[in-house]
Image (cartoon, rainbow, N blue to C red; front, side, top):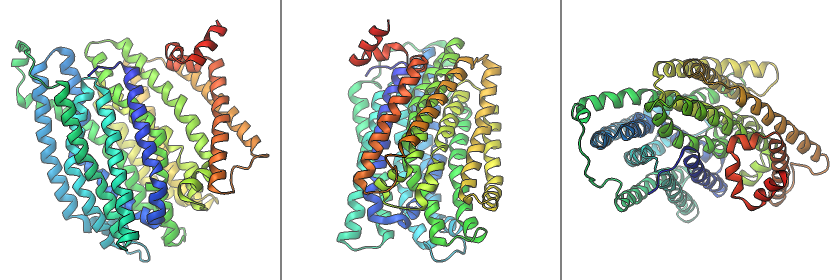
Length: 549
């Protein structure tokens, strides 16, 4: 296997993750047709709790082991590196069993917390059933994540990223085939169909574990190559490794728990507030919830996958720079991360928002409430991407206490202001669920702002170039939006069949992309973000560059 540089690793990981997320979005079309919006709400309940407990079971060790492996590999501590991996694997195995048993046993209690005394929707028995099935995946996904962390720590990004695609493909096959057979052949209820669907995560993880095991064995990454154990390594005990793992783990687990908790805040407040305070009927409120937790978030993952791809490469490379005291490299990677996120996520989120009606029509069919919620919630992806990457950057650079403070303050704002914002928005005549989305965005912004300030203060990061190119991205984005809105006067965005929606999305997507690309090319933004070298490999662009010269 071959090690990748930061930009190349980010590109490989992003391509695989984007592919995985596109598959994760496309399967939703037939899945939604099979189980409907109410089935999506039930799936969302199970998936939200599963995600939280999966985070608790791994306690941030996958990212921590990537950081630790990268650190020890940089220092040449090969014996300690392998020792740390084995210790982490055992810890995660124990935690996965504890989390599985906890979620399985306390599923009825958690189901009561979710649904409360509300009647007319899903029962707590139905929620308990799907939550218990989803809990089985924890036993396997945890082991999988540790193996990926080990590979990423060595900067072997490709096999780790490809494994995500394999896991997704298997999971989708189980979801679609299983739920279809359950509903249309065995004539079972939505509960059984969703139960089979959530079990897809378990099957996908099991098969992917086999793939990674074979890949690692064939590659020889863990062969016992002869290294002379250094004196420094001899002094490092197992207990010291455990303490270091815990130190690295705490901010990662807090980041993951806080990230999941934003969704849990919505899950525990949105439906109850919309029904009891705003006066919305239960069915519509659950549809709103399904958009926020399942259907809309599925579409959002395409945008967020860019951030996930950067993180996979950012963590080991920035850790390597920090350990070797290459602070100029640290500053460059911080700015490069900001630039890539701004350049990619802003137009993608804007485009999806403008095309929310045809996008929703293609994936889920005609709907009044779905596109309205999604058209605003998609902008959360910009802030979620920054939130993810700069918390990881802070942790790579050892700013742990400041990570704790920024994460907790952002979440506390969201937890305390979610309901007030919904009531405020409803009072001024804006849909109440926009208040919940706004609360989430501001919570993320609090954490992001604090992190960027810390990086500037502690590492003398100069954001001047990034701010300038952010301005160019916004100019290009505004111009793109203006042209697309102008085009709507002649070619309506909404209305028509699914085929019409596909054609509209393709046409508007191509026009918008060309406008955005040309403006950012002329301002030099795209060349600053990605570098000229990457474009010289594309024949058409290479010829364009020659003419420019």
